[in-house]
Structure formats: structure tokens, C-alpha cells
Image 1 (cartoon, rainbow, N blue to C red):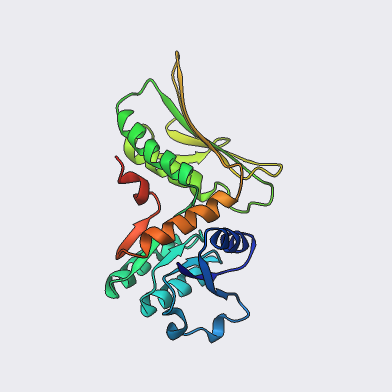
Image 2 (cartoon, rainbow, N blue to C red):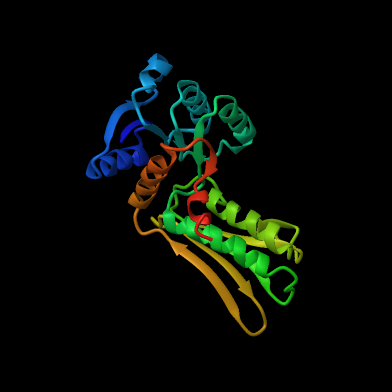
Length: 240
């Protein structure tokens, strides 16, 4: 597979390494230094693009890929206010877009399981739900996009709480989210339901950042032969 890589930071370099190990070809690496020269014609020889840049850049890159007819996997987070615009542009060009808040395959299985468990919990008021997450000290967003997705799916599916809040500020009718930023933790997430007599936990812990690069490549291979607007969880929801 021929890949255009947007961004060459820590994640971009890991995608490059994993792609080479898998026998894929990185045909272009786009950074702030050469992005202004990029045209739709430059993108057309590739099979897919993978973006790990910044929110503003990711939106602009997605528009350019759609205009070029190039499937694009967006691993960048923080741009979701523009989600309707990207989806509309994708439909306009009959293009291919896949995005995700977390590209760990295992975490996306947990997303799917969380949705199913939340629906099973509807009406089970004896259970008190909460979310717990931990990341390294340098992570800027708190809660993480992963924790927010878990929280939103739990709220929608279970209807046990009407909104989420940081655990230190949560009222009784809110879903508490505990956020820890310490050490060099790559990422740990838990969905917890607790009653007087039992505790249910869904937990995922990332042990290597390479899983995110491998997940992005898996997404690119899956998307390359498809048209439409997808979330990474769609790959795993299909198995239910």
C-alpha cells in the first residue's frame, strides 16, 4: 500500500516505521515545511493518507485529500467541532474518511463493549457508574478524548446519569470522571459500575505507542477499498 503521511512527530515516525516493517511504502511525508507546496495532483498516486498533525491542519488536510479522491485516516484529535463539515465534504466528493479518538484496536473493542454494557445497565439504578483514566504528565487534554467517548456512550446508553463531570466536582446525578496525569503512562482507561454487592470493570491499558500506529495502518488498509464516512470503532462493531 502507498501511503501519504501527514505529520512527522512521535506518532508520524512510528507510523513510518511500522509501515516499512509491514512492507508498505510511504510515498510522501508532509510537514509544516512543505505543506504549502502540496497539490491534489501530488496526492493521487497514493492509496491512502494518514494524519497525525494538529486540529486545524487535520481539517485542511482532510479537505485536500477529499478533493484529490484520496482516502484519509485522521488520527489527530481536537477537531471534532468540524466533524459535520468533513462529513458533508466527504459526501460531496463521494470520498473516504475514517477518524478515531484512539487507534488501539483493543481500546476500540472496549468502546463497543462499553456501548453494549451501557444498554444492559439501563434501569439498573443499583449500579453507580464512573470513568477512570491515567496518562503521562505531558498529555494536554484532560479528560482525554478516549475518556470522553467512553463517558458519552455510557450516558447515552445507560441513562443512569444526565451528564459527566470531573470526579472532584461531580454531583450525585452526574457521571464522575477521574483524571490522572502522572509518570510516563501511555494510557489506562476503566469503566466501572459499582453496587452494594459487586463491581463490574471494563479496563484497557496501552503498553506501547506502536499499537496506535498499527491501528492507523489497519484503518488505512480497510478504508482504501471503501467509500463513506467512518469511525475506527466501525471495524469492530461489524463483528456484533
